Length: 298
Ligand code: PMP
Image (cartoon, rainbow, N blue to C red; front, side):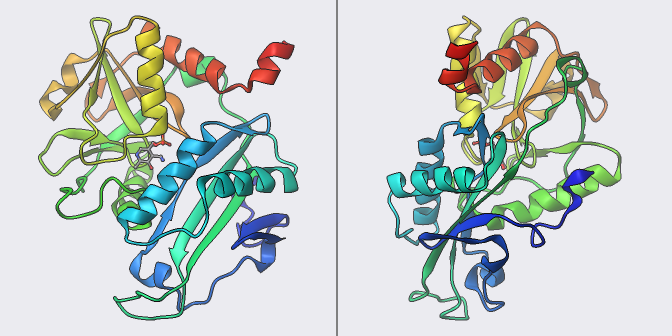
């Protein structure tokens, strides 16, 4: 895979604490609170033809995630938006992934870090190709996760916080070792929740069913796809979905900035056939993310 160049061994520019710095100089000290205690929040964004999709919503969510972790990012939404655009431009990227991250610095080492500096950085890298439609519509295979999304009383589940990804990495690795692409996580109550980096949707008799996002990330893609479905007159029901219902659905797909709309062919013993609803929403989403200027030029 071309992607195997380590991330620390690349050239380009990363925006860090207010300025673009050479990629290799964008470093932190080993005694960084964010590294030891997961006081870190981040975003995952995607640019299509140089334009970041739903950029402001991502910047707003980053600030909100930090607030949930009890720190304030010292930049406004507009400044973060601009930093993201500057990084895409400075690296001459067109179709790429954008990663803002904010964290507590290295002034204090210990659980308490009231006076640590809050840092913000934005990196971006090429992320162009997605599979051709026929290949995508075959769907990915998902296994069942062991860890569950935590009770909101036990973790700041509405934040896109680094610490919440500990169990996601464990489950993604376990799934990959078994030859699957991802893992379906239940929540603390045993309800179907989401995958390790994407939300999940099901179809039955032309109606979409998706878990209520009450203890996991209510993804920006999730909300976009719900809007797209409603525009098409497809009914969307957000509700509790128990695992014993998985056999009753005909289609399944996952959504996320990286996943976009990815059809699913299998969850454990259950098989799905990506069909009309999945294909329609996949096409509608890919049409929507295209920058307007390119659509107008076509
Ligand atoms: N859930 C998790 C755990 C994620 O990491 C992501 C990706 N950010 C999502 C859902 C989907 O969120 P979004 O559509 O905002 O990318």
